[in-house]
Image (tube, rainbow, N blue to C red):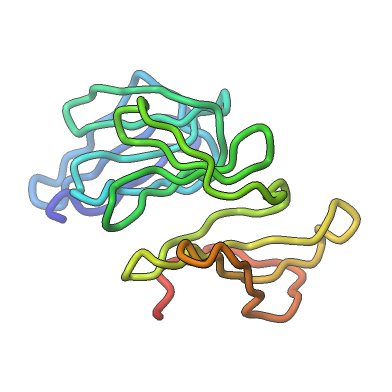
Length: 169
């Protein structure tokens, strides 16, 4: 995408877009971005993030913002463009970019998971998770199949995992 790098200005928690071509920054000032990762929409026209008050925001590059459901770790599916997130009831959901069509994807407990990314074909969702509050100091990298709805652990338990993205199939 020609817009380049997304930055979150820490001192104000504002979403800043840096255009590599013009070397200018643009602030999306209607929201305070939360601390979860940012995600581009499948068509690269919107940025999806979690606001500081725990809602999901879809920001277009024209400074228009649509705020929808409460949820954490929102990420955009690379093919369908739907937003996947963990809702306050600790289940995995998906919602359309316009916020109108919401669907529960999985009934199991996702309260200790952090969504990372999708496989390139969009069939698998990678996440970091611990087992429970008592075991949260140990994290594993796991995958959830969107076709079989099964979770599988891919890694051993680690003390800390930071900044994982774009897994290969």
